[in-house]
Length: 241
Figure (cartoon, one colour):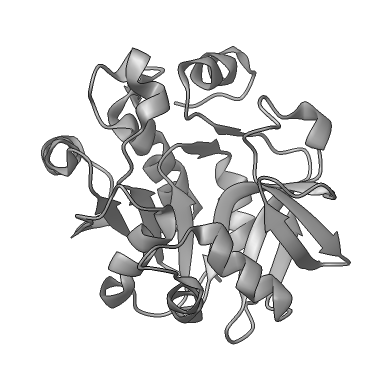
């Protein structure tokens, strides 16, 4: 049985690298195979068992809200959280949603496509108190843009290091997390001058042995934060309805 029903989606950023394609639209609304990227994320998460989406919006968030309020026909309910500090790192977007989260939750990025079964497997994991589980991909040679990918280093099932610049790594961060609400405490503790990234919080968790890895096996996923990455995802065999 899947007990986690809430999904937090970070959709607040500027999306500057997608600007050649977005023409000023927020990146989550850029279309991929006939629908906005964000809707692909939501439909896949809903198929996995999510019943409520908490969506953090920032840059042109009114457009995202208007699109979903007028055209979302899924069964999952929508809660919007405004992040006026969307120019800061994504950890701040997560912190803005703290009061909207009740219990353990799925955390997704608005520009990461994935297979529903990966989210379903993640939701079925047993989450220890104050723990976070990150879905990781050990197929490091198959990534589209390795320089931009967030890397992880594991010791058995525990992640001991995480970041884009780490030299030693054995898997990649897919942007899919199963979280306890304790994540917000770690993000606050990792903040410096009112700013922090998700990786800052995850690194704190890793150092305390509270960040666990779940391998995704042969499942596909795509980080579509540039026009080139979007074209690559479109050329892959994974079907996004």
